[in-house]
Length: 168
Image (cartoon, rainbow, N blue to C red; front, top):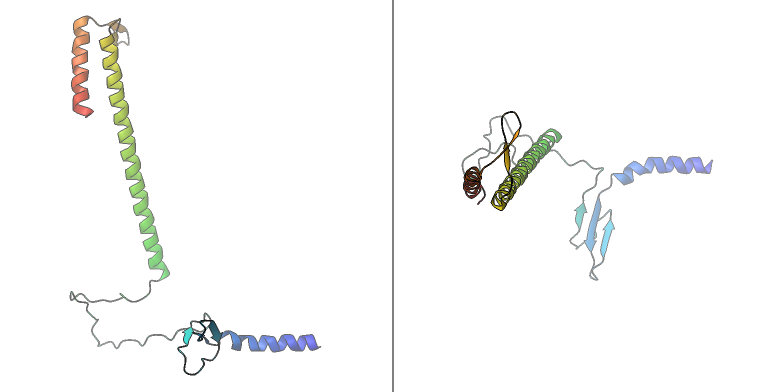
């Protein structure tokens, strides 16, 4: 019986205690104190309680003009907190911008890797042609046709010109 009475009493007093304002201050020795009533002659600050709603701002009259900033542009919602829809939209916009930047960076890295491969292939072909020996080139049918010395020199000069142009 006493346990039920205690439970009912606690249940009734909990909303009153939960909604109470809490104050904080520091004493002369520097210790921080918390209380539901501020002590006299101290610089006590009210701690915001999650249970107590803040008072709503007074609505502007319909005839009052919007406040303008220094550049003369009206500020409609400059100080109003953002709603969840606006925060969500901003978040999605930041995600899209980041994804776009990542895609651009990846594309640039792939282009750089392709160019390095191309230049490496050109250098390797020039070295192979200068080394001499039996070098051939495929024709339209896919058959390997050996190159003579003049064709090899023409291919070397063409490859060197391409290397100088594209691989600086």
